[in-house]
View 1 (tube, rainbow, N blue to C red):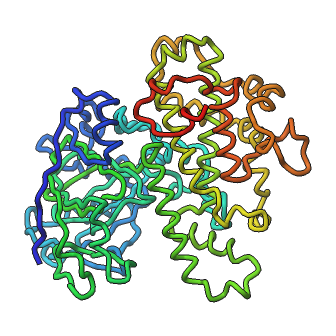
View 2: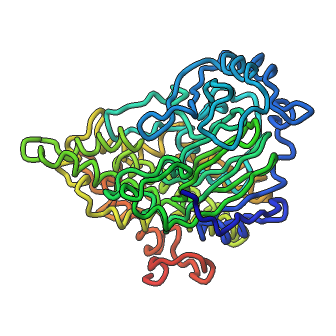
View 3: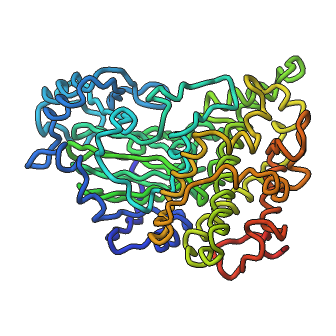
Length: 515
């Protein structure tokens, strides 16, 4: 069955594009784009590639050969993915050297002279070799909540499906991919419905992308599984909508970066021996995609075990545990995640305003981005207010050190890693040079002084059993988070009070209008 292709991906010179233009044209519209000119000074492009622009296998083996890696066999399917195996990088380089050159054809299921087609995927290179700066992330992709967070916290704190933060495989979503001509990745949408960007260090890729508006068409009749390979003979009976899909495609050349938006299913083929660097990431622009995926996966997990609800004392907790195991986080993980970002943004805005009120207008682009992110959290938290997981009886089942300990505002701001986390956020939004020269640092005393905490938080947010209201404010639920953000906009001493809505034309929210 052939596929219908009716669109190309725009190719733009990244050096001539501002962040605001990128945000307006691609982030906000959730549209893919190919960007050129952003990889010129990458160390990887110089040291990992031969003069004839092929992977420098000897160099990679000599410098990183002991690294444990995961490779996918592109000729062997296992359930909904390719069969994977573990080996060292040097073993993979040895395999690659033995492959006959140029013997792959367009049929991606055919191996080279009956050799398996192995594709190195998901190598956490940055975490494993932090001192080796292989590349510099383009400014368009630095507002990366996912990886900033994972650099300082573990994701799964809301379940006992724990992953050691020091385990490289659990540590981030920054990857190196490399594989010979003919290797490929089956049809998929990215983890958490995140954005992704992928830069070709060498080689060429063929991308096929499907807009989110058509994603229902690639699922089976039960809306559970998707098509594995769009070039297979896809069963019309099993996938009745597949024949209606309309795809976009592009050829990604060496030195180009592709931006893949949230929810775009894609299948990718390496047309040459290829090395790429890839990040998954999300921020205020696509936070709602992440929440909607969690909600959908939660409903599926809940439906799967619904028949044991009456005999299970902690049914909701079991649903959340299964959600974390299947999706990578659950409702509690996600809430802790957005709460820490909210507190950090709140503190940064407070500090910007405190240092000198004129900085609020001088740093207008920075303030605009921070306010946009705060409003994005608010909108998602509003949709989380009434979910069953945050009922007091379900919070009671929270394991380990306890829920209130994790979401206490004073605890969050008092941790050393929170200060490092906040500084990373500052660096990601690129404060103006005039502001950086002030050597601004987060001051714990100013952020959690009695007067500041008590005046900034509403009484409903301050409520926490067993602690004085003025000393242990806690964000115990999405409703608390909503009230906090509303207070920051509505109260005369709120950090966002009195901001002119016309300053934020891209933000659609009643926080400005109501107050």
